[in-house]
Image (cartoon, rainbow, N blue to C red):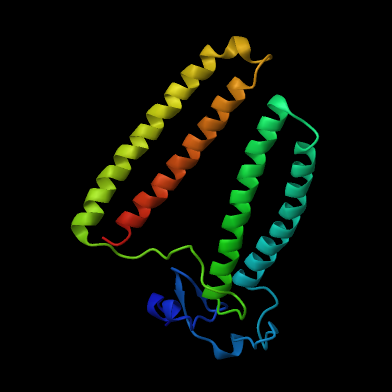
Length: 194
C-alpha cells in the first residue's frame, strides 16, 4: 500500500495512487520518460487533470491578450473593470501553473518540477486547537461581512444604473464567499489529523 511518505519521496505511480487517498502499487502502470505509458489505461486522473489544466492555461493566455488589447483601447470605468479581470486572470494563470506542477510532480511525470503548493501536514495539538478556534472566528467574521455588504448594496441601489459601485460591492461579496470556502477547507485540514 502506498502512503504519503512514499508520495513525498516522489516515487508515486499516479495510476495507483491519488494524493491523500492511498492506493496499491501496480508496476505495469509506470510510464517511461517519453510520457508514453505501457500497459496503462488511456485515461488516468493525473493525465486528465494535466490535459485540462494545460489546455486551460493556453486558452487563458489568449484571453488575457485579448483583454489587454481591449484595455489599450478604452479608459475610465470600462478600463478599471477590465483591469480587475486581468489581475484575476494573472492570479488564475499562476495558480493553474502551480497546480500543473503539483499534479505532474505528484504523479512522477518527467519534466514537472516542485510546486509552491504545500501538502497538508499534521500540526502540534495545541497549535492546531488555537488555529481552529481562530479559523472558526474568521468564518463568523466573513459571514458578518457578507451581511454588511448586502446592506451596502441595498444602500447603493439608486446608483445601480449610473455607476459601477454596486458591481464592486457584488465582487466583494463573491470574495467573501471565496474566503469562507477557504476557511472551511482550513477547518477541515485542522480537524483531519485529530
